Length: 493
Image (cartoon, rainbow, N blue to C red; front, side, top):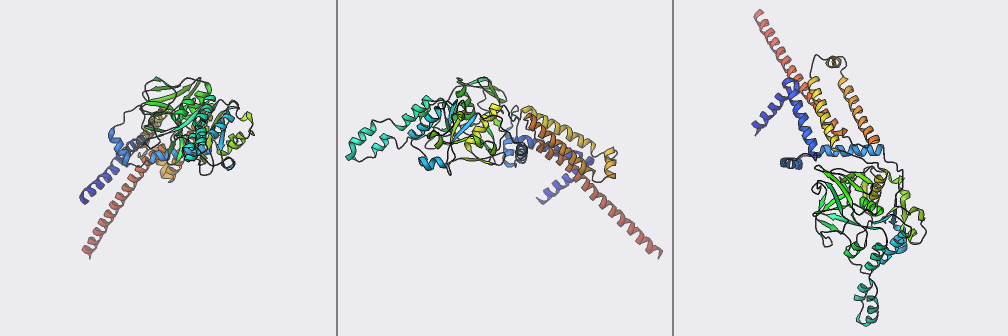
């Protein structure tokens, strides 16, 4: 084993030193390009099976660096809202203190839906799922009464259930119920959802989108009464939300995310349209709105700071007591969600802010209304790879040349390498930031920086080994000259 390691080490040393380090630099260049592709494989290429095994053991350095860079861009230039299409009715601490703990009886939730519907919104989305019967319904209460209260029990069973009351409210309003997809089954999950039709134009993208087997949804009676069903899932990477799927797979069918389903209900459209090709989903359409997506049906969110969106929140207590301004609801998309302490699903955005889960849905809808999408199209990935290959080969050809003007400049100015490197990288990151801010394009300057820096570093390694060899050669020559002088001195003596 030691002999094998020594041979491998000697081979690498020889390779680094050979031809002024060019073969080693080429190896570094294309190996890192492969690892970069592993973290973001282009959808128009078949992915070899062995790459999945390699990806499982390799750290996702490029993916992490890419995400951190895009987060930095957002923090430098967060979205400034220019419209207010969404109002959030929050079941907050004030509401819970006055009305009672959560979960509420569903007839009380029906009262809230009726109060919102009376203000003429375009759609009402509930970030709430109700998979189990309401135990406070009259018939359920009657089942728990003693036999001595048969008369009361009979009267209670004659009353409508709380599910029926809520179903009536959902049917009378432009309502959308939320659901959550799961990869595993639980006692309350099912395998189907009563969702709106999906009309596909082009290739079937079911195998490209996020696909799940199970869903946690509301009772069938409530699903049948509402005007839409939608998934509430978000894409979370390393604890941060950067994207949200607008379309997902549930078993063998596709189902919409909450933002696109809210638009469908608001416009009275019969179906969500999916425009796809062999690479995956290209866009989603509702009425005359076209939303460009990533091939997996996700959209990157350009987040606005929570400080800029606080005005969209209205306490449910104010709505129930008739204190909320009707203008905040008329012709708006209204989301109902939990923000009370200990109840809400808090998420971290790309801005580093901790926000309620319902805020993510609101920002997605707002982004669609404003048409300010962040995009990372397939051609941009190939443009980055082309630039890395082209510039990397230029470095490999030019840097080792000892008779070039740059080499002469380096001899005169020892810190020229550092100066040129810093200048080029500042220029690279500046160009990518401009593409982000003014065109909504997510260009991966981080991967370009890592790979080209590694190529330059490979020449530095070759230079160190060459200097080491030169030092050893000079030492050997000095030792030889010393030995000759010593012998000549003896002979003279």
